[in-house]
Image (cartoon, rainbow, N blue to C red):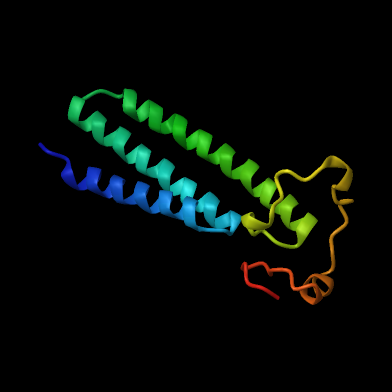
Length: 127
């Protein structure tokens, strides 16, 4: 038996996830794209098990599901914190080299003030 359909589906899912990670600027959509990639790996692991008639791939798939659940929890917490700090979840607006002395105070900036400054909104568009 040749499992062409599951492998092609997994390749498409992984490609779609990789495209989403590379092209999307919304942090939630990037997390969803990572989940697509992890599910593609799970599909390959389970398909490989059916070909070899072993259960090691299923155990690894279960492990990947647990890791994905933890990743979603941590990722959504980071997105929530980012939104509270900047009122925006656009990943292009995150300064990774920001000096510690200029770190924001943690107080949320009112949406009206950000819109008046021309800052991007939640969906990544300019206000």
